Amino acid sequence: MNRILIAEDEFRIASFLEKGLRANGFTTVVAPDAPEALAMAQSNDFDLLILDLGLPGKDGLQVLEELRGQGEQLPIIILTARDDISDKVAGLEGGADDYMTKPFRFEELLARVRLQLRKSHLPKGKEETVLMVGNVMLDLRTRRVRVNGELVELSAREFTLTEILLRHRGQVMSREQLLNHVWGYDYDPGSNIVDVYIGYLRKKLGGKLIETVRGMGYRFQA
Ligand code: CA
Image 1 (cartoon, rainbow, N blue to C red):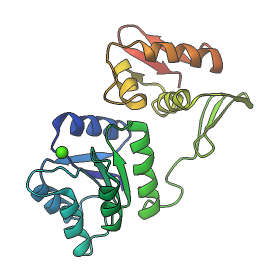
Image 2 (cartoon, rainbow, N blue to C red):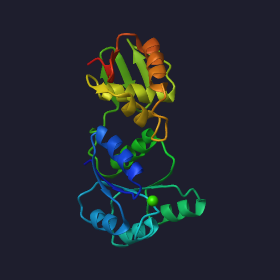
Image 3 (cartoon, helix red, strand yellow):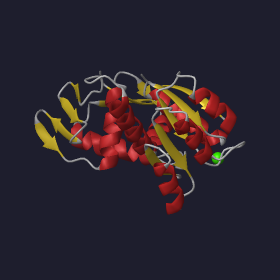
Image 4 (spheres, rainbow, N blue to C red):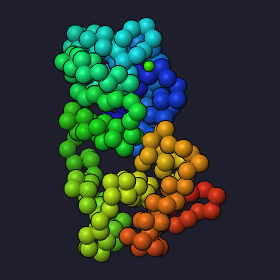
């Protein structure tokens, strides 16, 4: 139960969403306009719809209205640049399950997607609540980290970075992937912020856990 339909006409945002969601184990399809979004959302091939409002062909609110009018139960998260409260109210009253405004951070969207899938039809117990690798334990519900049983204070960013590295333990994660996941698509790709944060994590979690793979990125020891 992890197929996500992305109704989005802006290529850059659509591909950013696809990349991030796929890296987290989801299957994605992009519908670049309203008619396609409608047809695909009715196909029963998806578990969740991320819906832009400014779509070619029809307004996203109309897409929402038609889907709910037909009794379509698919969880829908509106993702839009419109931050007007009246749009938000219209979206939620029109049957959207959640409403997020652009610019957005991928980590937040991912959390909301997971929440909706849990609420709808993801079987209980499917979602991990604790990640353990070696002597590091991440509690995803309380967002607390323990190393050798000792609580370690991490900022929200440090926690998310640790979570992503742990989820992909044993794999090399590029700086770009980490930037996209933790800082969002509008972050300067030339920034060294990833390296700076890896430095913080090494200090807090222990120096040997995160390996530098030259020219490629970072890898959390499996
Ligand atoms: Ca749009």
